[in-house]
Length: 261
Image (tube, rainbow, N blue to C red; front, top):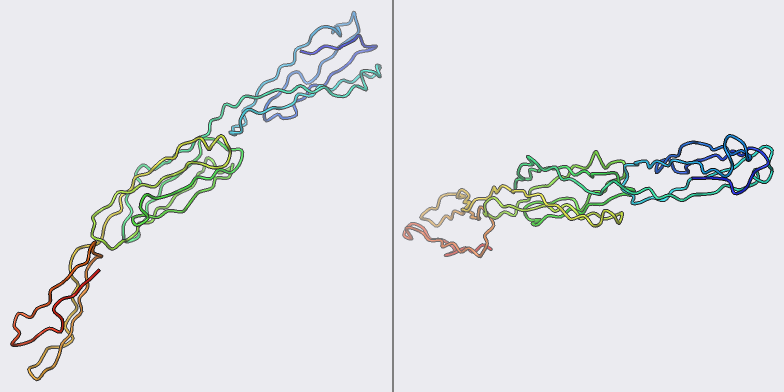
């Protein structure tokens, strides 16, 4: 409420304005006070209504100013008064949060096939927000280190791509997780917990030997033939292969065993 401190010589108009309409608006836009005996007595309280505005930004409680500026055409004293400021706090009602949309994400594959999911913010931040990304097993799937949301990107979000990795071990399909968050940036966002997405990396390795064709047949005059051997997948431990001829009267081998690590 507002009233004058003393009886004016003539009518006084007080303009009422919010200096931040994103946080609050005022009504009416002006007040009129008259001398004693007038329609709007100088010493009668008049009401100014202030309505909070939702800026849809997570910026915490915000203080804004309502400015009261007097003017009087025939009263130099009131006309010369500087504006009076009233500080008002607009309480925050937008909450920080982020959502991970991973339904139907599918699997990654050791062949390099990727899986994707989307991350959005639940409200517009006041400053850029960074969400850290990490994988529980980089040997199964890799991901970018982070996504950064500019304030205007909060709703459209970011697509996160997870690339399947091949460790060349016949270990079957492997389950791993990608962790999103916690956020960094504005203090209000830092209290949020991280979220996880569970994926499966499909194995394409098999246990076995890969043997090349022999370079040529042997001959009784001493001609030699050669072939190469390797493992079909990476072993978990050292593998030793025995190399023997089933008929040493016809041919002998140059080695008796091969080792792979």
